[in-house]
Image (cartoon, rainbow, N blue to C red; front, side, top):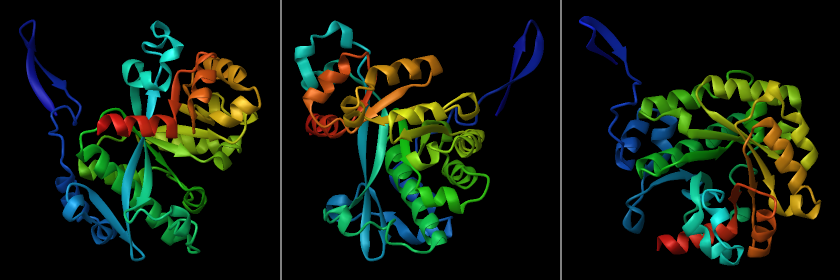
Length: 298
C-alpha cells in the first residue's frame, strides 16, 4: 500500500505492509473465504449447537476440532519468583510465546482409535488431510484473535510426498485468507531433523514463503544437525528424555551458542518443571501447563 507524504517540502511515497490496516477476521469470515478452495470448502464448516462458535472439519465420518497447547516463556519474571510457587505460578510469571495446535476428535474418543493420518495409505490423500488440518487450526486460531505464534506440525509423509517448494501451497492459502504466514511456525518431525541436508532444504523453503520453522529432536545428539545451513527458528526437545539423559544443561548451552530458542515440551508434572528451572530453561510446554491454562481460562 502506497501513501503519499511530504519530507522537507518534497512529495514522497512511503510503503506500508499489506497487513498493516487489516481488520482481524472472524472464524465465520475465514470459513467463507475457505469456500473459495474446493477441498477446504468441502470439508470445513462452522460447528453447530454448543460448537457454533468454532470451525470443524469432516473426514471419514468423524468431526475434527482444534485444541491448543500453550508454550510459556518462564524467563520473563521467573528469577524474581520463588521456585516454591511451582506450576501454579505460571500465570504470574509466564508469558505465552504461542500455541501448538492439536487435532482432536469432537466426540472425545481416544485419537488412537482413529488416527486419520496413520490410516491413510494414499500419500496424496494424506497430503490433502494434513493441509486441511493446518487450515482448520489457522482459522480457529486467527479467527479467535489469539495472540502469539501458531505452531503447526507437518506430517513426515507430506514432506516426502511434496518434492519441492515446501510451504508454497499453505502460504498461498493463508494469504488468500488475509493471514500473515510470519505468525505461523511449521514444526518438522524428528525424522526430518535427523537428515542435515534435507533439514537445510526444508527450513530454507518454508522460510522463503514467510514461515518460521521448528525442529523436533528425538535425542540430544540430533541438535548437531542444526547449523548455519539449517537455521531453525526454534528447537523442541522432550523434557523427560533430556532430564533422564542428563542433557538439559548441554542442550541449553549448545542452543544458546546457536542462538536458536529451545523449547522443552511434554512437561508432565511439577518435579520435571522444577528440575528444568535449575538450568535456565526459558520455554516450556506440556500437559502440566495445558491443564493449568485451561483451568485458569474457565
